[in-house]
Image (cartoon, rainbow, N blue to C red; front, top):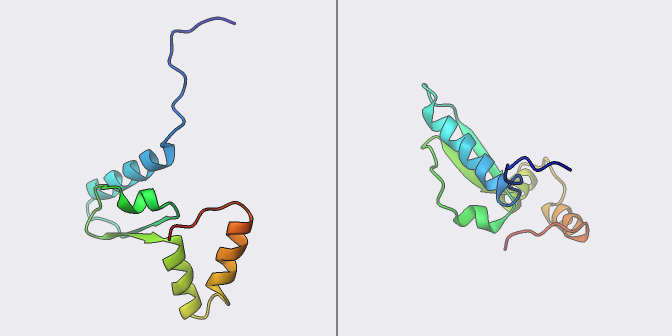
Length: 92
């Protein structure tokens, strides 16, 4: 195998970097589009991203509750339970 001198691709925090890049893009578009950034990880909620005024961060749990309130989803708790059983970690 031949050494290329290139650093191995970065794998940690790629989701966070992609979200920040998307938010930056939203902030630079004129007129600014409306965006909703759905997150599941509590680390995203605490992160101080540049958040354009017309954009919102929404947790998976809050989105599921919204869907249930609109009667578009039978049970937010059941979806969350199934996700947890399948290895997902919901923020508290």
